[in-house]
Image (cartoon, rainbow, N blue to C red; front, side, top):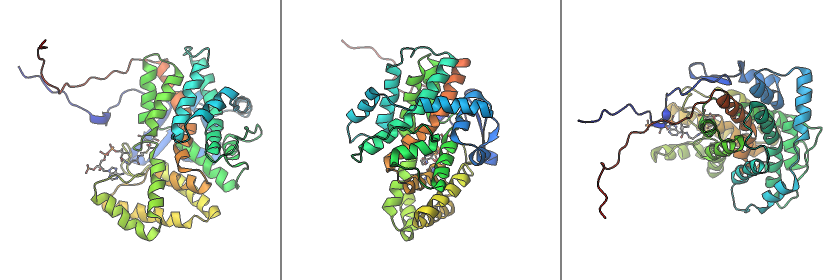
Length: 373
Ligand SMILES: CC(=O)SCCNC(=O)CCNC(=O)[C@H](O)C(C)(C)COP(=O)(O)OP(=O)(O)OC[C@H]1O[C@@H](n2cnc3c(N)ncnc32)[C@H](O)[C@@H]1OP(=O)(O)O
Ligand SMILES: O=C([O-])CC(=O)C(=O)O
């Protein structure tokens, strides 16, 4: 009797695996909401701390709630000596994502309550990880330039403080705003690969640090968060906007992917791109980045004419972060600094209504056979 072959959903494309109340992606209208609020509106009216609070607590904070939350976040920014020395012991040649992944793992190892998976414990751990990660990323960024770390500044907001810890001063307001907007846009995106990885780990009743570590591993890949770095490497390779059209045609002719384009869910444009594109142009305006804007426009137009495929969020963030002065391999760690809020909201949601995530597979190997001694 021949076995019936089940329908296989390669890459889980189109499969709905669970419900979520955290964010809603509507590809038909290119829209994205966090807890019911349009992400574009959040980017205009809120700072990153308010959005983190919203993702974790389901509502935007009142003035008093925000004050308390900000105080708690600022109080936990410092990395202790052992954590900072761990950063300095990492090989100079490793990718900063390796440092971030190792640092989160270390935070789990030093947490005596690592196994406490209650929602209240996980909310505290989420805040601690979110508060301290920028300190780690900035310290690692500076050590690669032979510079000492700068301690966090308790009077600066989350976005400003990170820029200050990286560069030693707070840049122009346009740059701070564009950076803050990028953090808000990167914070959450339903069941993307890294969030799903976090939910899979959580579904085994493992701890939040293990789930975040797995998510960092998933985000690192160039088909996901790693694309923001790949975009800028490509742009540097192109160098001259006049060469952009031919470069893109060559990539397509070689049947390679153009980084920063396409999306599993959005087929008609990424809801976040118009907001980030405007922020990128603001940054280019104050940093003299016109060349990258022209290149962006040519690549976008050529790709659209050739394939109909539109940019995703990583396309404008790549050159925006470059113009802000970040090394290219810090782009995905910055994505982690933001997405950790979405991941941890999902970890808490998964824990509240858990079912072990364990799909089936269709065996395609050799038929059963006898072992010959
Ligand atoms: C924040 C984020 O994670 S956003 C995503 C960041 N990733 C990137 O920018 C990497 C480049 N993009 C891609 O690889 C893809 O668009 C993905 C992985 C993001 C989504 O892809 P999927 O939904 O799996 O679609 P898939 O890769 O099968 O593409 C469908 C078709 O469009 C083509 N296509 C999709 N994206 C691209 C691209 N960036 N460049 C060239 N062709 C593309 C594919 O070649 C494929 O063509 P075919 O049907 O002729 O074989
Ligand atoms: O949703 C996805 O598949 C990828 C993405 O855009 C994100 O995680 O922000």
